Image 1 (spheres, rainbow, N blue to C red):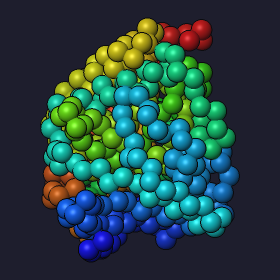
Image 2: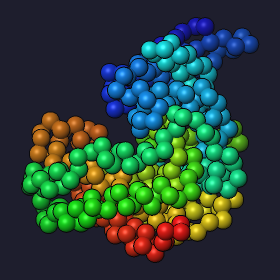
Image 3: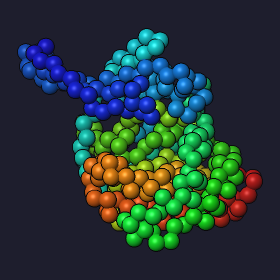
Image 4: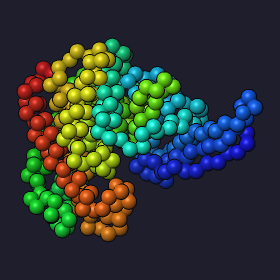
Length: 355
């Protein structure tokens, strides 16, 4: 070995003091030739608050998903190759393949391709692949996420809507429509969880997806951060792709409606390519309801943070846009997700209890 270096990429997870991410790189002599190499190291410190496998943010879930072998050769999408796993009880370590990004900036077409790949992934398990049965897999992730946020308080608070930038973009806050969703949360989740379930990533937005290419030049979508992997109805992964990729404006706000329609259509195509022969209406309900339940709860909270100069500066750095552009993008996202919420109510009623 000629040289080695390492650098922290970022802190990860809901509690960054308990989880860390590093990239190691170096040069080595292989068959008398000097070659570059790199790998990713992820580390988790045991968290007593999330120490039950059934909790939505169980601290050890990703480690167990990799070390169990369930992510090897998954269909439709890829996961970084596991190089080594070490469990020391209070601390767990994963050494993973460092997958290069072929397209740092994704246009709408690339999101649509990722949606097709997610469809092939989810579709394989609702078609014929046996579902894994591990106790660490999430089973009610989205319900836990939605109920974890005290979002009705934010929706009703004048602080969420009163800043001049927010008021200019949203002169009439849609409080009644948000309250309507709040009253239907339990009903929608009961319907979602009664649908056939499939293995799902459940955090597959832009930051957790890598657009790579195979040795033959074929486009691949590789998913990282499998911390929430578990069971969900077909349609939920693509809902998180569309919604999550717009909250931090990774995707272009003006393309939201187009991307939403095209990504859903490509996702259904992916399901069918994997052998699924079900009802598109059921998947559309799962998409519409999941997108609304995933995205609408945090939006009022973030609108309220625009009034905080320090938080506004942080948002501008994270989104690489000024506050006016951020709020405009969020306003478009809010309107689109409210439309999907309305669609989900009608679809839930039309599906009936038999689905």
